[in-house]
Picture 1 (tube, helix red, strand yellow):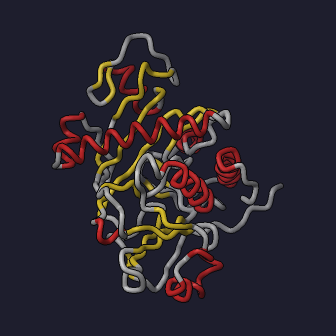
Picture 2 (cartoon, one colour):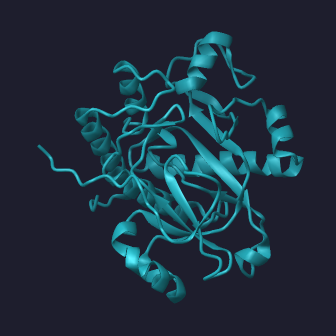
Amino acid sequence: MEKLSKPVTEVNLPFKRLGTGKNKVREMYDLSEVVPGVGLMVNTDRISTEDVVMLTGIPDKGKVLTKVSAMIFKATKKTCPNHFITDNFKEFPEEIRKEVAPFQEELFGRSMLILLAKPIKIEAIVRPFLDGSGYESYVKNGDVNGIKLPAGIQKRDQLPAPIFTPTTKESVGHDQKLTYEQFIEKVGNLSTAMLIKAYSLALASEISLVLALKNIRFIDTKFEFGTIHPRRAGEGVPMFLYQIDETATPDSSRYDPDYSKQPFRIAMREIGFDGETPMEIPDWLVRKTSRNYRKMCRMITEEITI
C-alpha cells in the first residue's frame, strides 16, 4: 500500500492574519510590516465539501493547489493581472526569508508570496460545459442563474458558448447563485462587474487552451478577484482589479478526466455526509482523493515531484 505523508491541517505562524477566523483551506498572513503590500498564502491539506470542512486532511493537497495555481497564474498574467509573486522560497525578498526561515520546512511547497488585495465577495464561475449544480438547475428549470439554455443538453455537454454564473461568497453557510443583475448590484459598481465577467471568460478560454494541449477538458471553474491600489502594487501597474486566491485547481475546477474534488463530493454523500456536519474521512477515500489530486497536478504541470 502506498505510504502517504502526514497531512498538514494546521498552520500557525507568528504573523498578522488576514481576514477573520480560519479559511476553509488557506491560511493568509499580512507581511506588510516587513515588505509593504505583501502577504503570505499557505495552502493546508484541509478539505471541504458543500462549504463544510472535514475532520481529516488529504496528504499533499495543499502542495497540489500551490503548484497548479503558480503555473496557471504565470501562464495567464498577461490576460489578467493576479496577486501571485512567487512560490520559490529562494526568490522571497531577503527580509521575508529571514522572518519565515524557521518555518521553511512547514511551508515548503505549499506557500506563495502574494500582493495584498481587498477581496470582492463574489465567486466568478465560468461553465464551458454543463455539470454540477449548473446541470441540476438546467434539468429543473431550463436555466442556470437565470440564463436560458437550449433544450436537450446532456450532462457534461459543451455549451454553445461558455456562460458566466456568479455566486456570493459567504463567510458562513452556503454560497447563493446570482443573476447577472444581482451580481452587478452585489459588486456595487457596473464597470468593475463588467471587468470581472470579461476577465473570467477570458481566463477560462485561455486555461481551456492550456489544458487542451495536455488532453484535459476544462469543464468549469471559479475565479476570485480583489482590488489593489496601484501604489501598493508597484510602479507601472495600470489595473486595480486582480485575480486572487487560487486558479484552475482540483478544488476550484472540474475536468475530464475527472481528478478534481467532484469524485470526493459524490463519495462523501454516498457514505452519509448530511451536508452540514463535519466527518472523519475513511482511509480508502483519503488515499483515492490524494492520488487524484496528485495525478491532476502531474497532468497539468508535467512535474512528478508530488
